[in-house]
Length: 322
Ligand code: DGY
Image (tube, rainbow, N blue to C red; front, side):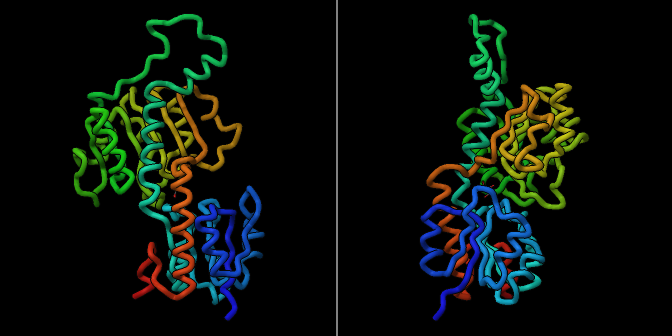
């Protein structure tokens, strides 16, 4: 029997790639950069499965270019806003993602960013490199304390809860806004307005949807404390970048630390890059060796299950099975 044909849009860790290559006739995009949209349309022609990354837009045109034989789309990420899930569901194509295994890594990153922004680590490191460190100064680069401060979590799913768990150890008071989540780790549910008003630190843990697009905007930033620190490890599109730039520049809020931006990658002339009180890292939330290995493994498991006509272990549109 011929092996199913798949297109893998980047070289993923061998923990997943080996499984894909054993079971499939796989074309793996070799570039460091993702395939262009035109290249993607060309490469998927006639495939049975696609293993995509969050940098690939998998829309109806891509599905149609693959053709009626397309049995599965496996996204190498927990987020799946890059996939038109409605279009996949309409074609009865299951879409897989990689939940759970990147929870701790992403929560660690959120907490690292929170601490870094609170204690001005990036500014401090730059200060030393610039040769400005002449003496210990009583008022040099003063930051914010965590103990006794309030952390507001927007979204209280797996990652939000893992951040709450870490925050308990730092003696933060924890509040969250997520109408779908039960309290856990000492976190108290509040409405969104209360969260904006009362939080010293705000960390975003919502998926990017039509409802959450630019949830953090000029209006919501204006409701935050002037001492507030905003942390985003979710998706760049949850924050309106120009509103954030204005809020940071005018010291309407104290600082922001972003693992994700809109667009990604951030353009080098983006005014956010010129701000001392904005720390930006290149979407590294899940970037630990073990986590990326497991993401590749789960993505491969989803892909192979879909090719075999089995239910995906992690399916974002299970309605395709009903
Ligand atoms: C995901 O899996 O959605 C993460 O953003 C990757 O780091």
